[in-house]
Length: 545
Image (cartoon, rainbow, N blue to C red; front, top):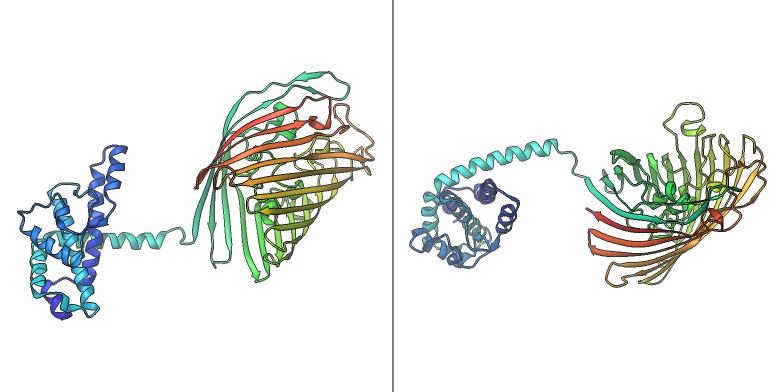
């Protein structure tokens, strides 16, 4: 029966299927030619959505007086084998209608062939086979044209497959729009000097990131990130790094595009995960930072300090290696080495002689609800103009307690934890201690003790599914003691204590849009109670795609 049928209609199964899909492509191409504006394009795209119909009478362009009408009506109603537009009209001229009819014919041929292949050939009558042959002959010219188009499409497809970038690469993008303003009063310029009034302007700025993620084995990942932004740090206006936003100052202010991150992660074994950073290495992305609701710069806390403990910022921006043992177990151990200027062959730079950080963390994760970490980092910083001990999360004195052109070593100790009281209520906290030693300069042999702490509360699904109400409170890094011998005249000591208070509401507009209004309050900025309280109002909108 099968052989007899295909001899009768003189069309192969491959041609039938190919012609059906090509017909739809042809129709779409002709529709696009007639689109002259965006509104027409939207309407045309909507009309190209195909759905099954149950009667040929639903096609308003097919007239009952046409001989093909009765034939198609019989085939559609008995075999359910033709698809049309939901709005019951064809788009285009007379030739387009014939092409669409040819596609419908091939849909019926395909359906009949399916019945024959599944041993239900008795359902197909000789009369229907004769009708199919007559329709095929009537539309032979259109079918021949469509077959030619199919050949062309196959050739183009083969070329695309041969030259495609990768079948394993995904693009993940994020765009941040930020409106922000700093409200500040008087600030003590320096010890013994008069105060000055700080003024600021409302700003509107952006940051865009495009991530290319590739996998070659299914258990590895190559990340290449493009970054651009024009967000200016608030520190220049407020007089303190304590007001910095979480997403400022990555590539300057010109929206220039740079590749700021390249890394490759893979499983050395089932119990060992390895990550190699070629540039842009950041410990907070390589290990658990114990602040899941607020760690992201684009969708987490609004402030720099509110994201996670400053201990995870050691060695940031460089190249290196991170190894995690038993990453999915209740107890895991991570070790890392990052070198900030690993690519620079000059003196006091390179992979081993430049600024670097040796890092270790022991994580206890008995359940998803409770995690705790014990963290250590030893950092070495060369004699740059500003050593920036804790990466602009504390006072100016914390960043550079020993003055310029001083080689500095520091030991950093931290404890972090998160506790999920319920699926909708989570607590996070961290505390840290840093002891820094000056190796050169006028303070050679001196040391400085630095302390910091913070806690965060997250109310999930507050006011709607996916929304998060957050509050973060703590003390930014502060120099509490040491044996510093020489202090520059224009430097304020950390004689008092600053406090960081941040409130934010992450509102989920959709799966791809989040709007986050928030307020950052810094009490006694720069650990100086002579400075007025500063406020940073921010509205951040984050688009992900």
